[in-house]
Image (cartoon, helix red, strand yellow):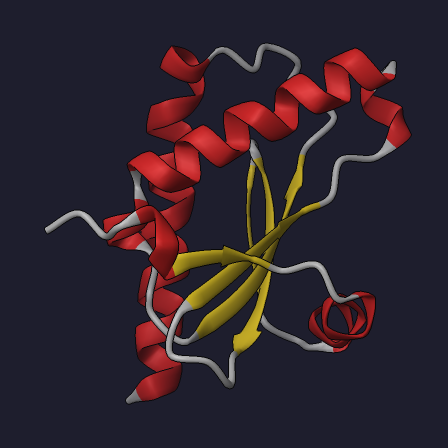
Length: 120
């Protein structure tokens, strides 16, 4: 079952994003890092943080577009009621959706398992 786009909202409040950064829940892989906390809403919310170390604005915006695409395509792996921030790794230079899809799916599976452990 694939979730609708409206069920994964964008997290834009800087206070809420700072609260996620101060939380201890994190999952990492060579493609990047996911910081997360249990949310207050029934829907999941996501924020993308791409640093200037990735290059010029055009490159950073492309990385964010690819990440949004990957999140929407793999939204069935994302647990409900979770706020999370995705920080892509600077080591991962090639951000084509084809090469990133498998690595990102692995990261989301790792994230889902960790979230399920917290719930139980």
